[in-house]
Image (cartoon, rainbow, N blue to C red; front, top):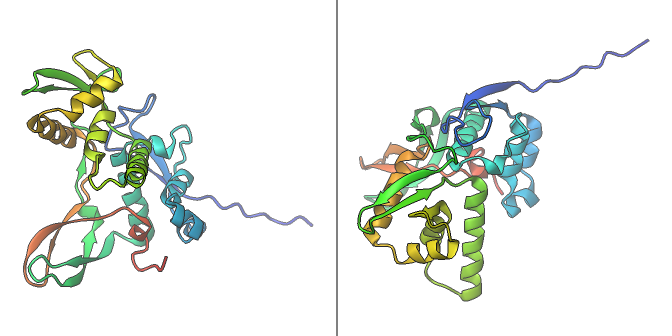
Amino acid sequence: MSENKTEFVVPFDVIELPSKGLLYPGSDGTLKIEYMTAEDENILTSPNLVQSGKVLDVLLERKIKDKELKAKDLLVGDRNAIMVFLRSTAYGEMYPVTLTDPDTGEEFETEVDLSKLPVKQLGVAPNEEGLFTFHLERSKKDIKFRLLTSRDEENLIKSEEKRKKLLKAQVSKLLTSRLSLQIVEIDGDTNKSYIEQFVQFMPAGDSLDLRKYMDEIEPGIDLRADVESPSGASFRALVPITVRFFWPNIEL
């Protein structure tokens, strides 16, 4: 007598990427994402993964069905969009948060509706190299830059932490380090040493204009939610994407 073996298939959905897939060769602008299961909760509660900071990367790799695209190669905005999808479909769209009242300084609890966080599509199409252009008015320079991936952001933060620890530095260089990584060409010059020096001495106005433009075109989900405190103060609160994004009240 043969036994019937039940095969469990994890359902999935196809989500549209804020970047439209324009920076991923061969992409149609969508990704197949599996819904979360109880097995995935083992990852969220794994002390080693949580302490190493790898927990969300491991979770994301498991949930992306299109294995030709690695989680760390996703733009930060696309990654956040997937995280919001996973959290919303697993535990609901209402996300409880504890915030500080800007008027009274007292903490209060409220909920953020994740479905109301606006999605921002890629504002400008990149060139055939996946780059974007911008003219610096004060420096009279034309630059080409790229958008950063999750891997880029992770490496930036690690390098900055290492630099501050090694040099016991009090001032962060994350802003200029990020610009130096994003800018790939200045008036046709691609020398990294020159780019780093240029960024260091770039007029503050050019730096601000460039960062504003990068923010305008970068795709993703606006993680700043409009909330109102008990005292009646209205302000914008950032929704952080950490392991607590999935389980706000979990003891880690």
